Length: 179
Image (cartoon, rainbow, N blue to C red; front, side, top):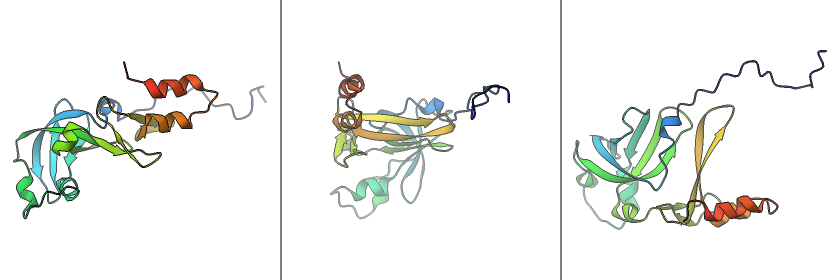
């Protein structure tokens, strides 16, 4: 026995975890982006987002899912698809970073471009994710390897789940990003 405490991790190999998702970390739900339509698919569009062409990001717009939740009645949903090569405004709906490539789902609905909402991952009620809204976007990562998940929460839902004795963090959750 060398006098080391049992179960002491071996720190001699201090190599950093290779994180494929690092270049995509600035992308957040509720963020407006510009995209170019690359191709039409039966369900929607593959797009390239300006500034993320070489960041290992796959981006798409699920037109069928978007327009199936609206009251727009249209005989041919494909007629709603912007043409290949068109530059479009979009809002980030979801970012999936748990494996490569990072997958980004965008919305082009006018209502989402104006004010994007998403269900809170704690209470299930919709929260405004657009700038100035009442949502926080949490990027959850592990020290054990690459990849992350995104959790969207009302400020108060997150604050309520932080231990009362950690009042500073509870207060910060309520005011983070606000002026």
